[in-house]
Each structure stands twice: as structure tokens, then as C-alpha cells.
Amino acid sequence: AQKVTQAQTEISVVEKEDVTLDCVYETRDTTYYLFWYKQPPSGELVFLIRRNSFDEQNEISGRYSWNFQKSTSSFNFTITASQVVDSAVYFCALMNYGGSQGNLIFGKGTKLSVKP
Amino acid sequence: EPEVTQTPSHQVTQMGQEVILRCVPISNHLYFYWYRQILGQKVEFLVSFYNNEISEKSEIFDDQFSVERPDGSNFTLKIRSTKLEDSAMYFCASRSLQGSQETQYFGPGTRLLVL
Image 1: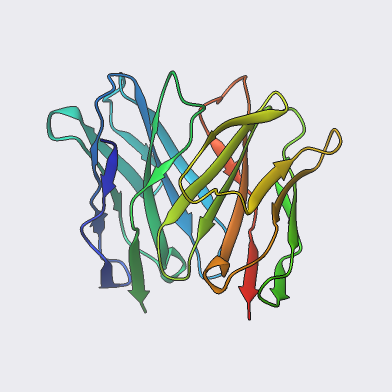
Image 2: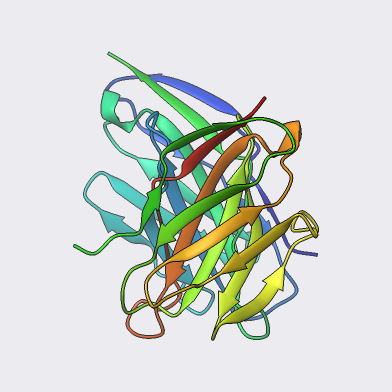
């Protein structure tokens, strides 16, 4: 079975705090991709990052960083020094490679509220 | 920067009516998708489309749904006889075969309300 679990439904922080959004996935495939998307209040889905299953190197992009650990099937997302503009719902998603045409399996999302 | 566009942004319809949601994928992309998101819930896969035919569809994509690529640019989702539970945000996405080929880029969505 393929599944993405985002156990945190809602998180509320004060501006400038660091926050980590958790993502745990299940898949039988050895080749797969993991994604994070941001959905601001306006509703669109904004691509943040893609990771393939062979690349466990962590990535940093400005205030965003991602920690991919195959041993625990996790792909966590950290925002450093959060800002009000980070307030959104964040979705983790899984795509299996080969066979399927690449449809995404989404987690239920984590709603992040950053208060001034 | 190229982007996926969708029209209309909002649509209100009566139960039982047909609706057509339109999408213009990024021009050099070859895989197309429809997803839906019921208010407050997760994004769910509906259907994927490649080489002018459906590649994969979910359980949600029943006989009431159809997709079409009527010309070289548009990609449409038709719901033949809408039900109250079809009320949702519908997202179109497209994916390239080159470069970051695993990444799907989403349109802004069409918010459908069935009354």
C-alpha cells in the first residue's frame, strides 16, 4: 500500500520560531519521489521541493530545509525563523516511479499558522 | 515562467447539470492530471492522461467523469450530471518528459459548487 501520513493537523507558532512539519510515507517500491507543496489561503498548490529515493542528502533553500531519512521513511520539512507569510497548509506527497503514470498520493496536510 | 492555467476560477451549478472545467497545461508537457480537493480535506488523484488517452484513474473517476484534449492546448474535465458531493476544488496539473520530469505543476484550481 502507498500512503502518506502527516500526523500534525495544525501547528501554531509565533513569528521567528522554527517549526518542523512531519511526513511519513509507505511504499513497496524502491524508486519513488517525495514532494512538498504549499497551499496558501488563496488556494493554489505551490511546488516546494522534490526528492528521489536514491538521494538522501538533506537540502536547504533559504529558510527552508528538508530531512529525508529512508530508514524511518520520513521526509520532514523545517522552516527556520518563520514568518507570517509562511502561514499555509503544507502537503507532503509521494509518487511511485515506473508502471504508473506518476500520480501523486498526498497526505492530509498540516495547517501552519504563524502569528506576529 | 510558464504556468498551468484553469478556467473558470469559480463555478456554481445546479445538481444534475453538466460542467466542463478547462485547463491549459504548460506547453511542452506531455502528462496531464486532474485532482480534486473537497473543502478542508486532502488532494485526491482523479485521472492521468498521456498520448491522448487515459493512463490511470482512481475510484472517484466514475462514468460521470470524462477527460478530453480537444486541441493542442486545452485539457478538459467534464462531469456529466453533477452531484452535491462533487463540490470541491479541482486542480489540473502537468508534467514534462524532460528536465524536472517528475515534478507536477498545478494550476490555480477551479472551485466548483453544486447546489
